[in-house]
Image 1 (cartoon, rainbow, N blue to C red):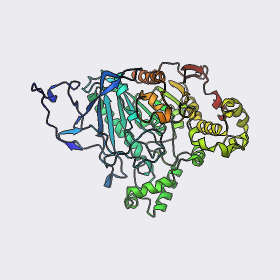
Image 2 (image 1 turned 90 degrees about the vertical axis):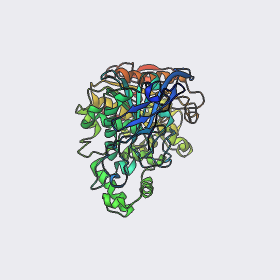
Image 3 (image 1 turned 90 degrees about the horizontal axis):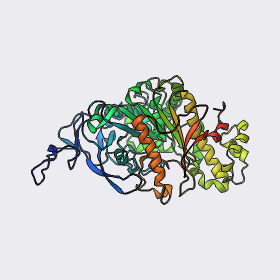
Image 4 (image 1 turned 30 degrees about the vertical axis):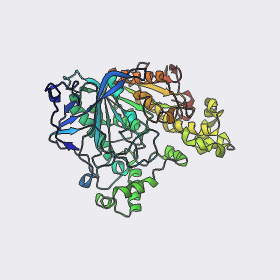
Length: 521
């Protein structure tokens, strides 16, 4: 990736190096490890979909750590050694995702190569900001059930956050067994350690890109949403960010016993000792093959995931994660940090789309029993979700899975945080393609990238730009000032921002979930 750059001269003899960064054809920024050269991109004029005059500088594939291969494969990440010359940051670097596991609805390309620990920075002001005078920073962690996903998605382009005065960073991290699998003599939670080092990189370098390291908001969706909640509850991460925005968060909190049992079982299936030396005999393709068999997320596996949790992900290790995230939140960790969280109405409903005929003759009570709803809650749950019941068994099954995996978690986190500053939303706008608000649908609204690829297959034709304006503006306001623009959630008013065809603030907008809560939170 490294190359030496000689500044080019224009017709009047002025070189790029003599221009201010915002005037140069290819802006350059000096990081602690070396200089990187980015590329200018147009932003989108707010609300119009037309190209605006403001520009965004993209610096892609900047390594924050050495490639995790060879002796470093199952090690804690090692900071990138400084380089000579100028690193051309014009294209995304290699991703930890290999191929297309087919588990995300977001276009997330896989890029081959070894240097998978990198960051992508989008900034409207690629010049060093004076202390305390930089722009707010949004750091995004991609999802993918902790074994898939990529930071190279066009939906994660930060150009329109830049238009609105926010620097954005997307980070990569090791996935699956390489990132989260238990190995007897290897550091635990290697993927989590990647998050931490990437956030340290932001603290050390973002001022050079015009950002303020004291105003960092971490955000992510699905497993990425779980990642930022994990970081919120981690004592060792508190100095790395100011606020958290969790989108459809899927926490892992794998127990030590489950983590070790899974690691030993996978090693046994590979025919190796559960050590670094043992796993070193298995190439990447073989590990992915073994991993795939135990990470399938089809309809039949979803209920098991809801019941037992994800098999790979951040694990309670007594080091980085000294207790579960809910326990940490209840003990007050992260209580001083503002939090926005919420979910779509039907995260998992699409997975049940083909189950309608198979479920048609199954009584509602039996269906709820199979999906883990306790007998004492079934009548109240059906009454609270009468509108969904009327749409058929597949819709009901999808809503139950959604509630148990995502929407119950929203209310639990709110309760665990107590009086800590917390705002709650619901994304309820029904996709023009599916007729309900499915998993991942809100991501392009958050980034205001309605002109991005693969939108129609998820949202239908002509998704509402006005809704994107509202979702995106709230994210900008939160990153900038720590308040998204509606009332904080408390246990009296229970105000929730509902994003729908007409956005509104509603009291107790998660009431239909409450029958699933044993204590009626």
